[in-house]
Image (tube, rainbow, N blue to C red; front, side):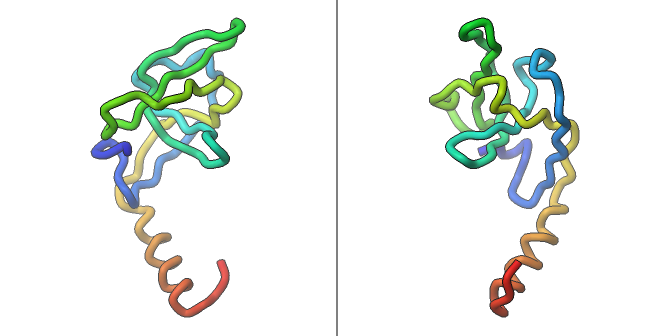
Length: 102
């Protein structure tokens, strides 16, 4: 959902940051329904004096349904390495084909 900014096989380096420094336009990693997601912040809001983030995948037309609470944020994208993740994807597929556990 982050194409073309982040594509399958890219590695995104995430830095832990103070969430008060996160602004619209930043790409963040956060927990959502027991998985981690990387989306762009499109707006910030507050609830009970705590910052929340309205996020959206670059390839999505609409923002995500739920705001991201500040304590769900794992960090902010600082760098993307294109295609390097394909090495891990390739190795994992070979291991799965021969039946080894990873």
